Amino acid sequence: MANAMRMVRLGRWQPWLLLGAAVAATALIALLLSAPAVISQAQPQASTSSQTALFWAIIAVAVLFVLALLLAVILQFSLLARRRAMTLVARLNKSLNQAEAALRAVSECSADGIITVDASGRILGFNRSAERLFGFRAEDVLGQHAGVLLPERHRGNLRQTLAELDPLGWGHRAEQRHMITGLRRDGRELPLQLTLNAIDLAGPRRLVGVVHDLSEPQRQQRQLHEHEQRLSLLLSGTESLGILLLDAQGRVQHCNVGAEQLLAQTREALQGRHVAELAAHEADGESLAPALTQAAADGRAEHPVLGLRPDGTRLPLHLSLQALHDRDGRLFGFNGLLLTQAPARAQDSAPSPGTVHAASLF
Image 1 (cartoon, rainbow, N blue to C red):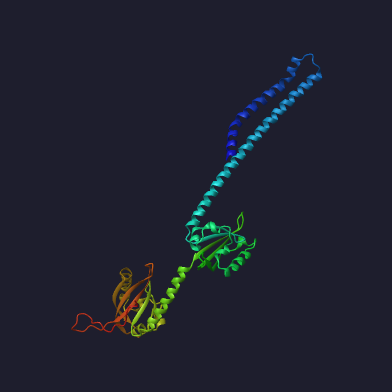
Image 2: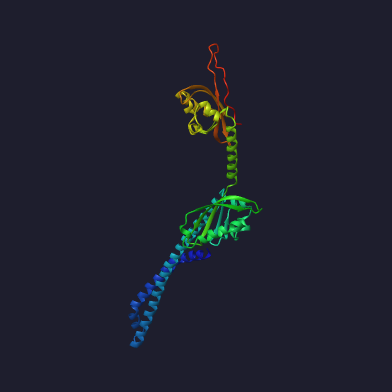
């Protein structure tokens, strides 16, 4: 920066230097043209050889001044080009610094851990999410081999991956995804999904790894599996009850033997069908959509419907819907409870309930 300021100050004087050199050159040229007359008048008695020597001396001085003028012009253009180059470099450095700052900000805000290593596996970058994930501070792992983040039994896999990224292949490999086991600072292991991307730019080759914690998804998967097992046991153990498990759109996902007997259809025939397709009348089926919406909003909904069996038999039913939500409050389905209704008697204005063929799952 100091050199640039000196160049700027020197550049301010260059026009005056050029103007002075031009005036001096003009004066010398005029002197050169009038030199013979001046010499003959000043030294009328001088020998011809002396006059010739004086003439060539004046010529030499004039040539030197012209050369000085040319050098000044060359210096002017050289300094101007250098100043423009320095300005361009300063702008590029500023843009590069801004881009690096933006990249660091994005990396620090990422929910996943981002780790950068060189070709030998030495850690060059370690964002905040990686710190939280592994329990290490960035300054504790920078410069160390990435194997410190893996159990001993998995470190050979990392060395093999780095060895496969030969110098000719770094810039041509697509991203790789691996299911690995990470090692926290406290010695606890955690399941991770590692996405690797090789970067081959003008500088040193680097490998960027994005690590995503799979602990929570795996826990949810285990809970879902346990829930499905409990549900299967429940459905298989309640043959006298009509139970339908619907997804969030109202399609049948599971049903028990009681529902098969009540609707006179197999489980395979019921699975994937919308609950509205079980109604005898199209109007009854269309009216089930508001019932699903009400159950999703209020948690429960009751709706009478005339069911239709494959043999054409129509059965008055009462459908009780219960909304099912996950831990985050997101709707993932409905518990459908089917109840049969006895036909209304002449002396009764309202139908009397018959045998109940359903019970809540929860």
